[in-house]
Image (cartoon, rainbow, N blue to C red; front, side, top):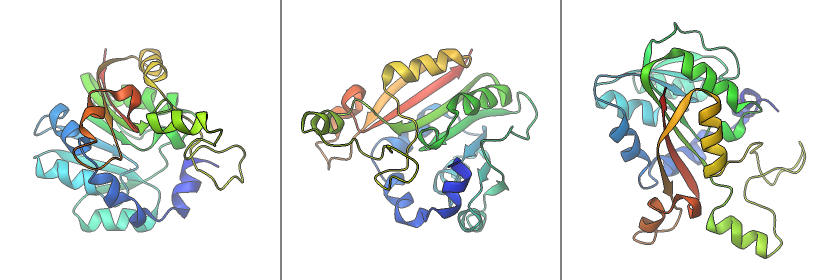
Length: 218
């Protein structure tokens, strides 16, 4: 299943607000994206992060294929392009300062395409900000010891256990960055644990539930 086919079926209201409020994810964007930047938000859903960046004086364009989500984003004042992120990006080269790809690349058959297209449209020194599940999280390590399937990962197309078709760890993320013309500027982690237990995982990303990655265009 292509990411756009999955997104058309997905009810973002179930998870989007929860993901938006996880610790460190908002702060990571605000740290690496300067005020006044032109930003592309891939798979912007109903516009939580787009709206946040607009409040930081950024000019934001969202790409989304789920019509219901796109309409909600537009009600938040976000400029939304209805288009699959698995197709070529319809923007001029070197026309954006930053790209947001939060909880996207794990759903994509070809994540390399997303980064290469982002590299084209980013200005020199532009940033791509990625959030994605971590293959080597502490939770996954425990599941493996217990002989249980990993969270969200499919075994076959009809497997309802999960909807992720790609999975990353620190090494694979760094390799993908280098392959597509980026250098990894910063790597941090996000934990699903409640406060204050989540805090150490921000600085131990190899054990965290989610990886936060900032890549800079070489």
